[in-house]
Image 1: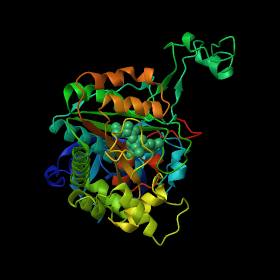
Image 2: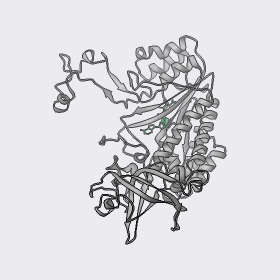
Image 3: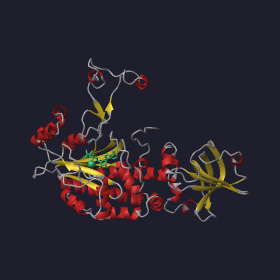
Image 4: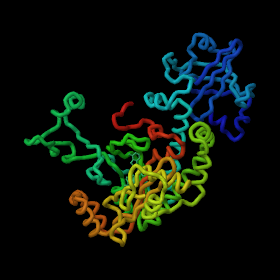
Length: 466
Ligand code: 4AD
Ligand code: MG
């Protein structure tokens, strides 16, 4: 369908041709002389209007009710000019075959259904306009991400999903126990199946990895090992956080893009983040026109203009201290009081991006490079309207003694970071990188309000269906 609807001649070059179409019936209107069947194959937002008269082959399937909303069909017909005003072209059906019938209980009928309802139908929601469009734009953003980094000489590195280190040191990791007995035993009797020491503690030595293992919260530390060998690298993969925050911007499983630049400082890092963001935003504006028009009309009015601004305008740069001053001067009353040294809350981020500049930082991780003032670090966040923090990044501490001090200060287990410290022992270089939450980028680019609608199968506290 995209071939025809979005083709260079808007399909006019196909007039008179016989085509075969596979797709799912969106709607059906049976009239006395003709039947209109809207078919969508997911290649684009538009449906193909298939017009069928009673002499077409397979008309009995219309009569018997097999051609119904949700059914999959094989249609053969001729491309003709449409009589209707909604579309230029339509398909005059010669033959229709119902490939798979759809039970009348099909929950996604024509009437508009709420996004909350559709979250309970995550297996069927990609068949709606909104979720089809989100899936295509998400795909375009992923493609543009690889294209940007590949074109700029970055090497893609696969960081592990299972790890023994906690990159952010925030203790928000999911633990991976292998629980040697079968998973069925575990579900029935979780406690008994975990190997324990005499004192009743978990006996990790008996577990699969011989010590505690976790789902990664960030691929950064692994990316750093490759950046100190291959120079510029990036990761793009799933990450996990057991944060108990039930918000519209947090997932327990989300994808992260983490470039790591060798021989680079915080300015290089910010320049890379800006260029990357502008590139991917421009990419979807240019390559997902139909879907973006849909979002602009139905999801977030004006989103195209806002994204065009991001693609062209310079980003406002604000130091942490200036951000705090700005918030202290604000007439607004915040729920979380502002003072120098505090972690910015989302209400503060919203104020900065939506009110102060209708157009920072947080508690600092151990790996961030200490500034000469001895109290701040070389870190940055990119905040955007509506989503808040989209990117968190920093220059890394490349000096061995500083890093060791910092691990001690934060009471982190120095031994378990032995390999990370080695990078500072053998050919250390100034380096910097950032992490971008991919679903927050999808939210920003499509306007969907809730992050649960920016990923096919959202995982949040209390919810891991499908
Ligand atoms: O700011 P964060 O915690 O930074 C890091 O993980 C660094 N190791 C990244 C790096 O320098 N390589 O997370 C980075 C981004 C955030 O800005 C946010 O967009 C996203 O990851 N993020 C989440 N997205 C969805 N759900 C969550 N629970 C998220 N937590 C972070
Ligand atoms: Mg952050």
